Amino acid sequence: MENINWKDLSFGYMKTDYNVRCYYRNGKWGQIEVSSSEYIPIHMAATALHYGQQAFEGLKAFTGKDGKVRLFRWEDNAERLINSANGILMAPPPKELFKKMLKKVIRKNKKYIPPYGTGASLYIRPVLFGTGPQVGVKPAEEYLFVIFVTPVGPYFKEGFKPVSMLITREYDRAAPLGTGKYKVGGNYAASLTSMKKAHDEGYASVLYLDAKEKKYIDECGPANFFGIKNNTYITPKSDSILPSITNKSLLRLAEHLGLKTERRKVELEELETFDEAGACGTAAVITPIGKIVDDTTGKVYEFKNAPGEISTKLYKKLLAIQTGDEEDIFGWTEIIK
Ligand SMILES: Cc1ncc(COP(=O)(O)O)c(C=O)c1O
Image (cartoon, rainbow, N blue to C red; front, side, top):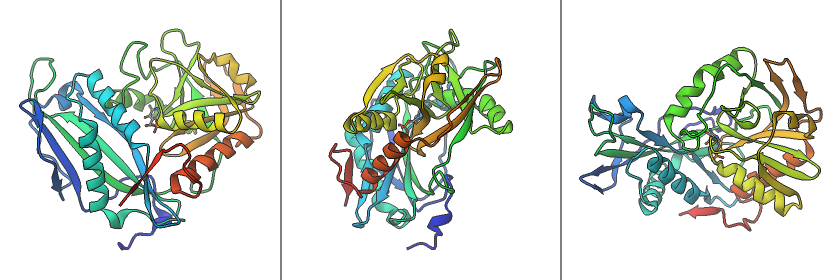
């Protein structure tokens, strides 16, 4: 066991022993390579560097009370990566390759998987990018698919606390028919200025509105948005947001807990009517929202009893399934031997 202070881990990068890699060359995927280097030699004209041919994923593995390591919904991440790759004309890594590399990198870095009860988990980062050179704007002919892992701490060190979000009309994250629905680096580059503005002003994140009309809610930085009212879990339907796997799981759990669920357009004004609001994603599962400030209108939306009862219930239930504390009746976890 490494000398790691599991309880003090942040959500950041820590070097581990190995990563796994696979090249796509001459129209096919090659052998899986295990590397102990953190670096990648890359052609200076690689399309990833010039034209943003890059996509990534983020998923977690957890150690349960039984000592078993559970991987959460990896097939959904594999499918989303295929979708992102197709969206920007990259070679999509087949699901079988994704699975093999995932298992290999987890097994090779066993000593970095945080133990049960620490609140920490193993964050897994698959990344795919164009390594082949092009000078004209064209997709590459060569791609590299890498998976690395890093142990991460709980997102909320002080517990499950409500945060404030900023609505600003100064920046958009994604165009209505653009790449917002893919997990590609360009979307994150496009969000950096607005996220910095939000952080500088004391907000946890930006709550983006739809870029065309500025009328509907899109998503919250690197997380989807949901609201709760009248025993209903409501989440925006939009072609410019990333389909969150956490959100998909919460929708299912909400149904299971007897709530109604709606995935539809959510008008900004509807914020006033929600009893609870939250952001959801792999990093934190749920970030309860206490306050949303619109810096154009000056309007403040407050959720007084945040974190709300239903958000708390959903949060605990999903975490319990991920760690194996509760039976996984949905078949979302896979034990890695
Ligand atoms: C833009 C964006 N939206 C939503 C999410 C949440 O998705 P997931 O629940 O699959 O982590 C993420 C994180 O992956 C993200 O980057």
